[in-house]
Amino acid sequence: MTRTVYVNGDYLPEDAASVSVFDRGFLFADGVYEVTSVLDGKLVDFDGHAARLDRSLSELSMHAPVTRDELLEIHRELVRRNGLTDGLIYLQITRGAPADRDFAFPDPDEVAPTVVLFTQSKPGLAEAPQAKTGIRVISIDDLRWGRRDIKTVQLLYPSMGKMMAKAEGCDDAWMVEDGTVTEGTSNNAYIVSGGRIVTRPRSVDILHGITRAAVLRYAEEAQMEVEERPFTIAEAQAADEAFVTSASTFVMPVVEIDGTPVGTGAPGPVAARLREIYLEESRKAAI
Ligand code: PDD
Image: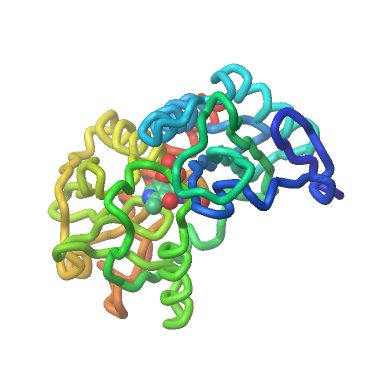
């Protein structure tokens, strides 16, 4: 089946959709994005993603080209038109396509942002087999820019990180800066140590994960202790459990770091419980 995608107000077959070669997303990675999961045809935490999108846009002095309600309608229309049950919706907004390549931003009154959305079907997304086995990560230096709290489309280094992990037969990489873990290439990182869930506090160093916010809220509601502080790779290797969170993986156990098994080397009870609660609550609250 040909996918229907959304480009600047139009719903088009994917092979009929196009963006200018002068688009600043293409030339300068001058754009932001969001990934929202869809379970049973409904959007998980849409409001969280819409709010973070607004923040990303405003941090880059970009105007929101669509309202929250319009955005919700576009998401829902794409779910309908593509018969999406389980999967993801990718949204990207760039600073648009001026007449020529120029480092300076174009006048926003003259150049409209480019808005693109498409669906990615992932049947059984919530039952990913890796949730049962866990994933294996390596550590790499965090060589990204200093505003990782803005969800920009400059994902070259995270892509390289995934490739470095693959080259070592692993699934992902945790990035390390000044001796502590910032986050995974496309997820937030956690350990469970001394009965506490430990994760780096929000700052410009990491993306403020929408899944992170929900998981920490559910953890506290379930009387689990949460400590927001940086941790090292050595501490993570010695922890009882480790896991990551993101809109595409929910809560995913990490069972090995740089070749050292974490805890028993199998997914632990805290990650399993958090995944269960997260999926249950997310399904209930999905719109
Ligand atoms: N990535 N940190 C980074 C660097 C990320 O790219 C992501 C999300 C997260 C988790 O954020 P959230 O819980 O809001 O998904 C943390 C998405 C899924 C992606 O790039 O595909």
